[in-house]
Amino acid sequence: MKVNVEVECSPEEARRFLGLPDVTKANEVYVDALTSAMQGAGSFDQLQELTKQIAPMGEFGLKMFQKFLESGVAMAMSGASSGKTKKD
Image (cartoon, rainbow, N blue to C red; front, side, top):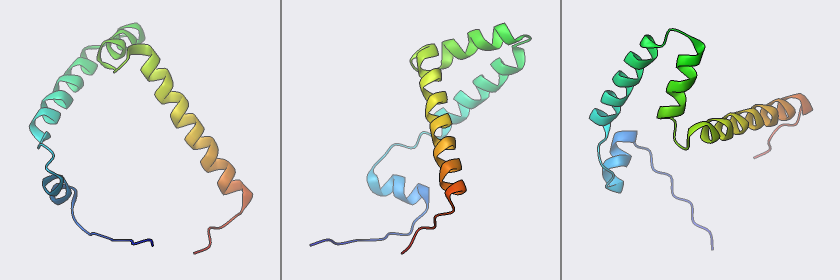
C-alpha cells in the first residue's frame, strides 16, 4: 500500500513542526561577515584564499560543488534538448 500526504506550509512552519532550531540570526551574522570579507578582497588571489578558508572541505569541496552544478546543468540541457515531456 502506498499513501501520499501533501502538507502545505511555509518554511518557518515546517522548521517549527520538525523541531529544527532557528538559525536565522546565525545565518545573518555569517552572511554579514562573508559580505564584508568579500568586499575586502582586492584581487583574485585574495578572493581565492578567502574561499579556501570559509568553504567546507576547502578547495575539494568547492570543486565537488562545481562538478555537481555542471552535471545538473548538463542534465537539464540534455532533457530540454531531447524534447521529451513528462506525462502524469
